[in-house]
Every structure is written in C-alpha cells, then in structure tokens.
Image (tube, rainbow, N blue to C red; front, side, top):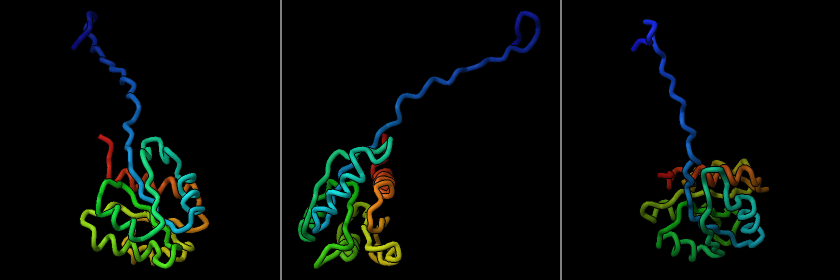
Length: 153
C-alpha cells in the first residue's frame, strides 16, 4: 500500500487492552488433626492465593476416614494433607489416595521439616511445604496445583 506521495504507508495497530485475566476457581480439601494447623493453612492461603486463582470453598477434615470418603466422592481440585497428623499422617494418606482413588486431585503435603521432601516424593504428593508454614509458600503451592487441574477457560 502506498500513500498519496508514492511512499509506503505503515499501518499501526494499537493492541487493545486485554480484560482481566481469567480466574481459576478451586475447591480445597484440608486435612489435619490439629485445628490450629488448619487455621494457619486457611489464613496463609487466603481466598485468593494468586491473582488468577481463587478458592471458592474449603472442606476441613480431622480424620483420615473423612478424607478418603470425601475424595472418593469427588469435587475437589486440590487436597492439602498434614504430614504431622496422627495416628495416620498426610504422607501415608497421600500415598493411599494416589494409589486407590481414580483421577485423584493433586496433593500438597505439609511435612515436618524441609529434609522430609523425599518422604513427600515417596507418598506421590505433587508438592510439599514444610513446617513452620510459610504463607507465601503455601499460597504459591496451592495456586500452582489449582492451575494444573482447573485451567481457566
């Protein structure tokens, strides 16, 4: 294309400002036998662990039997299991769920210390965050797992 003077016309397109990024909403199951740990996790993750990930609901479980029943029922995008729970901890529970529940959601385990990452790998957990719980690490892990299972449309 040429202009009236015979020179080339340069067409410039202004990129339209994209609307807000789509938000992925997730449902989270949280297991710990310690209510203080459950509170710390919920507060650390918050309602919006990342700009593009929002927690629409939490289900708290204090017993392994409840976790198994709820997970088998489906409807969760992320499971958070406390590896320090007793008598059955989140690490053993994670391994059981990964081996027994078809299409098990991704699992974040809370380990006793950073050196326990190998136990998290053994348990087939997708990610691990050690105690003492760091809210930034928790939020980052939950957002990452939420994006994996429930990508925004």
